[in-house]
Length: 111
Length: 111
DNA sequence: TCCCGTAGTTCAGAGATTATGAACTATTGA
DNA sequence: TCAATAGTTCATAATCTCTGAACTACGGGA
Image (tube, rainbow over all chains, first blue to last red; front, side, top):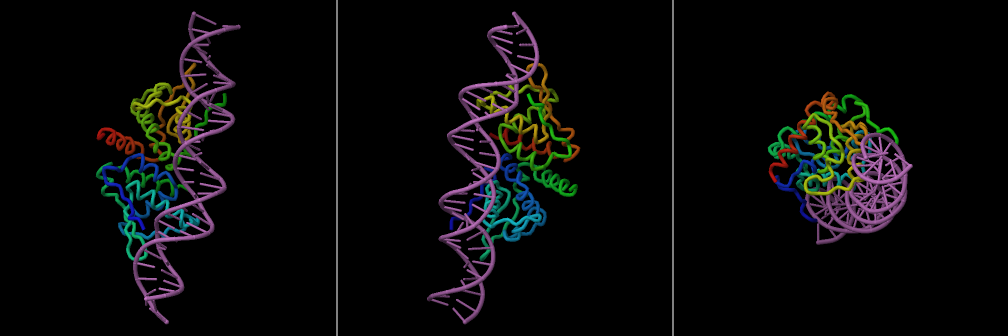
């Protein structure tokens, strides 16, 4: 299997981040990963907010987050451990991720 | 001509905003409109950062920003005046737009 | 060692989005 | 009334996204 691609900090773009997080499933996943500082396996998100997500789709979503520079994925035995790259991103674009996550929470609360 | 559609504040979503601003042309346009508190006509953006943009494409970009709730467009004579809806959006998602615009500026400076 | 189960990736086709030229609408001014 | 300007709409081509099916990779028995 190809090694997973992670962009260097220099290749992370605002547009890339916004695009990755402009999908309801992906923000939900990312918000969860970023929230707890723990690592998470992909299967943990097989259902996001009442919706069942096929695993091929899930895999693409993780790829999108990974290639936007938002998460780091490392194989650990049979599963994948995903951790957020918040600290790095925050160094490059201070305040961006917290603002997005906060907005996402506000919105979730209202409905 | 159909009257232009503007979503009410309640219908503005984080995903919609992020998606609208995940396009380099659109962030550039929006950042400019949001920056000066003045109104701007569409043609003012016929070229964005060295690239010529066909007017049909431009029209779609403005539509995208409008329907995401980011700008308000009002016909004024033969042209269209576009103003940002920052204040409204900021009331709903405090800090989101400033963070995105700041990040966009940081990125522009670096290249 | 060989086979099975689990976790995820890759591929290909269907479906949804986006970009753009051409034709159209609306408004102003001569 | 006619032409010019500013933008929209439409049709189509190009691009992106979703998803089932087939595949890879690892770990744990028997």
